[in-house]
Amino acid sequence: MTITSDPEMYRSIASEYIEDILKVGSGDLEQLYDAGKIVLVDPHFLRGRTFDNSIIVLDDSQSVPPETIVEVITRLGEGSRLIVAGDPVFQRTTEPGKDGASLAREILLGEENATVVDLGVKDIVRPGARRGIRLLLELNMRKRNMDEVEKSVYEAARIRAPDADIITVVNLLDPKRRWGIESDHTPDSLIIVKEKHMGRLIGQRGERIAQVEEETGLKVRGIPLTLDFRELVRAIHPVAWIHRHIIDTDFAGPLLKLEIARGNMGPLMGQRGVYIRFLDEIVQKLLGVRVHVVEAEERPRKRRRR
Image (cartoon, rainbow, N blue to C red; front, side, top):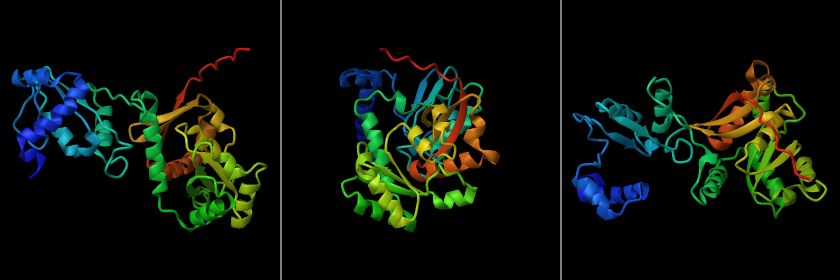
């Protein structure tokens, strides 16, 4: 038996969800149901319906087929508004950019009467949620299938720095060759560790990371996993100083948005865009999202109090 085949079960499960969102008791919610103020609709059964003077909320749209979202839009009647909410990064169940939330965002961006609001990590208010996002990123990185180069660096680092918690290793050699990256700043391999484990990976005088480089014959760099993705840009971008001009980084829909200070777009992108394509490939490997760059005014830095 499915949930949708049992209306009472469907209503019971949905009611708990609605109570949390609207902050109302079960008794008040039942009154709203009886008065027809709140209606629960299975998106599989929309044909023939019209919603007039209503606010329709379609939540968890990343799990809804894109065709269903369009079907909901066609059901809007006079005086109605539609709110589509979804998480195209952390809760999607399909490849990046192909889930319902991502495609709905792309469709609605070009609509005159639609407004798209991108909420990122910095907009999270739920206690513990930021830590949960970081742990989810870590989980996805640990699940990566490493290639032979990555495995060799991982094993060397595990032996030379046994007390460092290594999350994953990224092979940069192939992308460097593919995009013609010849900068001395960009390493051949990137090791990502838990926060506060960088010292254990590098060693007191850098002897541990030096031993890993000697054993693998590669230029290796390490970074801690944080939600400030400027650390990733700083570690691998061919222009060593470009991270100083990145104003902010955060998720925007199924993208990692980089805000770059005006006048620095050229060094970030590189000739024919090879630098940003290189960075985009690495970000897709690690985070499963594409990179989107926008120019912004540099914000004045706060003066430190003496």
